[in-house]
Image (cartoon, rainbow, N blue to C red; front, top):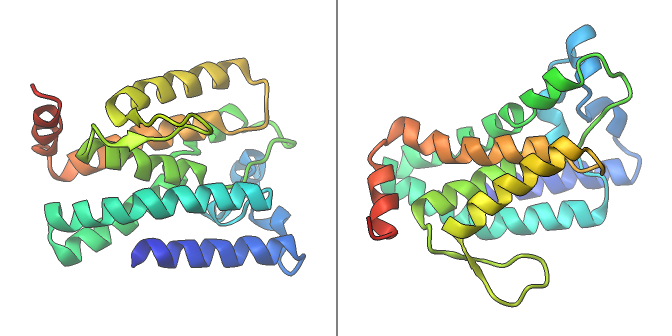
Length: 203
């Protein structure tokens, strides 16, 4: 339920921006404006807007499939009400946490900006891997699912490498820290989940 509400709100705000009914420039993340003009709301609002229909669709589709799974796991691990609250806190806080690296890196670069919920979606995806490490994950057009415990380190390595190269307009740093945060967040409240994770892998 929470996942669907997030998808509806995010899609609505993004579509309003696409149609020019909301000013995307006022909502997107900009490290310079955040720090030097005290527009701290940008560290959250950027997660509600997207650069294109494809960007929005891919993020929300990924969130739908993995978010509903994580919701159920959180409710099982923390109780129904607490699980819902913690899941919502995970998603919202991941939007902020995932962009801290870029906030530091681009603090004096007025021209740099970013949009999209990818950092938070990465957090949800990696939280699902923590609970179900053998879950199959499809990568683009590859027809064979990759187990989560294999996908996770490859994804982190890829994000780290691409962030260092800085050769495209994708927020790889946000993806990286969002993913790491998604692993760490559940463990802060239930460290024994790590034992469950290792047991799933046969340790």
